[in-house]
Amino acid sequence: MALFSKIFAKLKGADLSAADWEELRRSLIEADLGGALSDELIEVAKKTKPDDLSAAVSAALFGALAPTRREIASHSDRLTTVMVVGVNGTGKTTSVAKLTSLLKNEGSSITLCAADTFRAAAIEQLQTWGTRLGVNVVAGKFQGDPASVAFDAAVQAKEQGSNYLIIDTAGRLHTANNLMDELEKIRRVVEKSTPIDEVLLVIDATTGQNGIVQAKSFISSVGATGLILTKLDGSAKGGIALAIERETGVPIKFVGTGESATDFGRFDPESYISGLLA
Image (cartoon, rainbow, N blue to C red):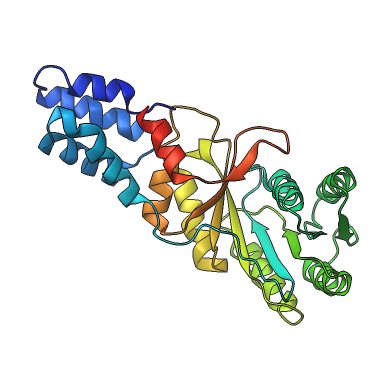
């Protein structure tokens, strides 16, 4: 992404005018860092000698990241249950498949739950992924009760001795309270059988600041414990990862960068910030 490479080059040149600083600020905002973080970085730059600039900006960027654990929950003595939530079009079902592939390659056994009963295509898509990845998919009827399907999946996953149950939920607008209530119902029903250990919220990196609005709504409604950031494919707008963590305090745990199952991995703050500073 090399977000700061041109900015560093400009800062190490002649003294900057007020118009130059405003142009730099605008560049940072356009890269989806948000106004508050952009202002903080401009202040750091103004107070720092050119030779020390990279280290100072790096420290400021690390300071914007959530200081919480990024590892996905894992229990050696019982089933670990993960709900995956998000708005339509963020790549939620594909992210479920990619997460399944990653965990399976690390030696975990997975049961998938197709709790998006509002779209027949979503059920079929997850079943296709299940066949491809060699994992069991528990699905109900089209337009059936998603909470009931999720409960059945939890029972089956426990009986089969799976390490993980991953529940794919229906996409929903973050402003639709009735749909948010449905997510909470799924959680309540599943927890009659087994705890929900993670609620992973899928955010499309290209939605920019709207992704922060979505995140805050889901965090408030269903208590998201981590983020999956999709489409973080090297665009100049990759600053959204910093902005979203700074604003929500919820850690990014996984990132998707392409369409294949291997274009997915754990979020590495060091590599991400190095890419911004390169």
